[in-house]
Image (cartoon, rainbow, N blue to C red; front, top):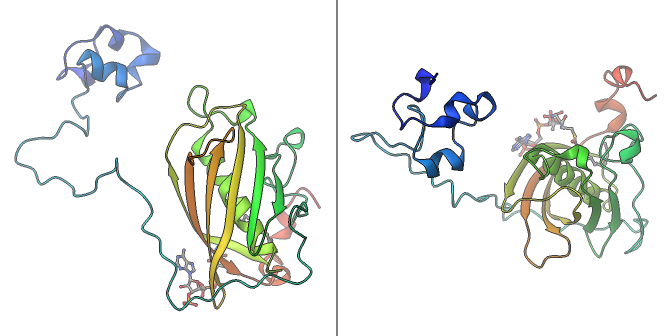
Length: 228
Ligand SMILES: CCCCCCCCCCCC(=O)SCCNC(=O)CCNC(=O)[C@H](O)C(C)(C)COP(=O)(O)OP(=O)(O)OC[C@H]1O[C@@H](n2cnc3c(N)ncnc32)[C@H](O)[C@@H]1OP(=O)(O)O
């Protein structure tokens, strides 16, 4: 039986197969010429098209001109040294055996850090590739570590990610991140991820971190933790 949802497009045998019938925008459907009635890529005549070109979407983030260069703390870990976890309960800091990302983040020059991670199969999103939310967490965490080179306590206020190419599970990722500028309590950071030593990044991210006083910020929240 063909679902009414797909009645406008050409009839497709996949409509009768429940797991595939949920893949409403799948490339296979598109190749076979069967697309759902509500497919957003079917552009109705006479309607004003959105100007957003999401194939070309990329960050328009800019560091404000009045931001100053980050100043590395004299006691920051030396280039090449591992940066210690900021909190043993942190998902980003914990090992994969403990339900975490299993990241190893090392100090670089200036306000730069490098994070290494092998994509655990448990992080799968689409078939064979990392979940975008997990990759966003990797970016968030590694950029956050760059603030540690300035000896600042921060939380993420804004995070944006561009996913440029698929990141396979079990691949080795290198994330390069740095603080680009500081403006009052605001730290502007950026990062790129490289898969298995490739020269071109598979994704990039920008973030705004805000400095906090940890003791004050987490005072009424720490009681929720199961890892005290
Ligand atoms: C722990 C140590 C570990 C150190 C190592 C860290 C590694 C950790 C990496 C993972 C970090 C996380 O995931 S942290 C978890 C996710 N994040 C959070 O839970 C944060 C939730 N949000 C908040 O608690 C709050 O919004 C804050 C603290 C971010 C900001 O609140 P606030 O302190 O009252 O300050 P507020 O005045 O609002 O903002 C300060 C300035 O930033 C600007 N601002 C604030 N948010 C934004 C925004 N989204 N986009 C643009 N600008 C913004 C404001 O306009 C203002 O600019 P101006 O007026 O001054 O110009």
